[in-house]
Image 1 (cartoon, helix red, strand yellow):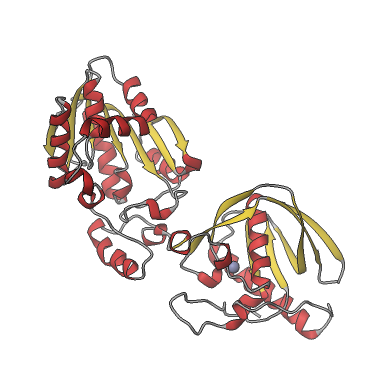
Image 2: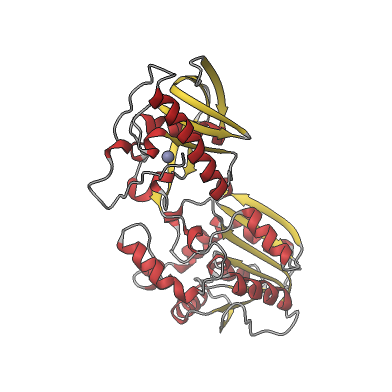
Length: 391
Ligand SMILES: [Zn+2]
């Protein structure tokens, strides 16, 4: 029988205790409650896989999640279903690492949790035979998460920092990328009121740079060091003393760094406050970046005006239609577009709140669907960021 999933609401105090109590060990493998529990776990997990898919090759459900306090989990690893009765961890061979996981009982959330990535477990199968299973990577993570369910740990015990490591994934809000960016306000406001996200305007984000900060020379040095690889790529695709456009919405620090290198640099951004700060940084550095205010998908330059256009941490804030325009516009005004974006693999709370995160594969598919050629790309920070050069 397909059962309803028991869920936990972190904003409520009266949550179902079955999710947070330790389960009973199975003693009689042929008892009616054992057999029924296994059947219902199988049926319910089948239904979940039918609805949600088995995206990462491992998916699980535990008895507590269908309201039964028995130490039984069902997991599908690859194409095979395992029923784990009274499972125990007998060997940890790998290293602890952070996994990004979801749980059907905490449906809207994702969490960063630490598990060993190479383990061996022992368990009983439905016939009562003792079995062993060696697990690695995502499969290791899923099975350890299910075992946590059986001791009543929903995953909270695994969080090093609840505020930071439990979050609502932003991809859920823009799965089709079709939500106009101005409509994000309400969604993010409602999330912010729950304390799980934040939307920060660039001007607030760069707050101290606006006010008391004056060492803009050091600031440019520091930023240029952080983005060395991006700058190297921009230089590689630009002839000496060539022309570069930054399609941005930030401080123009990298434009200033490139201007110091003798390139002719043009900067276009839409945020008036940021432009004012960017100009101040340029002046203080004695460089000669020229500034224009406009959306980056309507760059105020002629066709093939520049050798290279670049952006960093900007394109991920655009919806699909805007992104398509921005890429086309970039390649209209320049021969190559170099850009850096965060991906879905980033830990979300380091973001500003208006990102539409895509996986690296989704970025590749999008760029190719738009008819552009990827000349090269490189992932950074465990895939949390990616740089593309497209033409
Ligand atoms: Zn779970």
